[in-house]
Length: 180
Image (cartoon, rainbow, N blue to C red; front, top):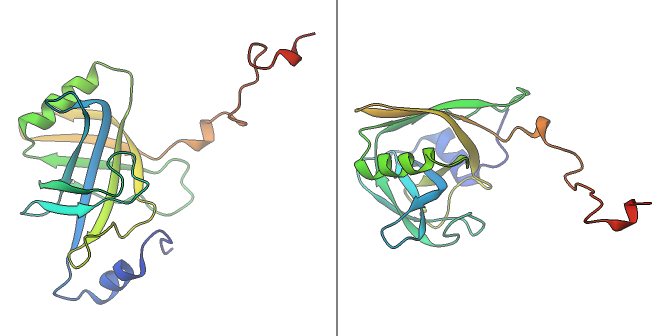
């Protein structure tokens, strides 16, 4: 089944495979405990390539929307979740040869209850003014394992089947008219 979130340009790149257009796969990991040296919340951004990539994020991005950011070159492996009727699509993400900075951020995240979000964005080498998928895929990273050579984690889409509906919770404190 085709993915309606993909742009026409990347669909053509997949179909025609021109030799002068490269699809650049990027990942962004976000967590409130990921802070830079100045104490500002930051993200881990990597590109599956041999050189760093500077590209513009979509305007609705959770962090640095519409800004040109740098994705650090890093070997990683992932398979996109299938477009099917599975209850909660799940993928495995593996980052190879991780730096001490990434391990430092992940160690900080372990000490909190917040979940690590991971966003996949494909870019075309000929168009770095925005990702070629709108909206990009955002998953929640779980079951992270790290060793000296790599970090592996399982990522899931939002489990909408277990969300409360309606999301509004009616309490006597917020809605005094409920109390007799």
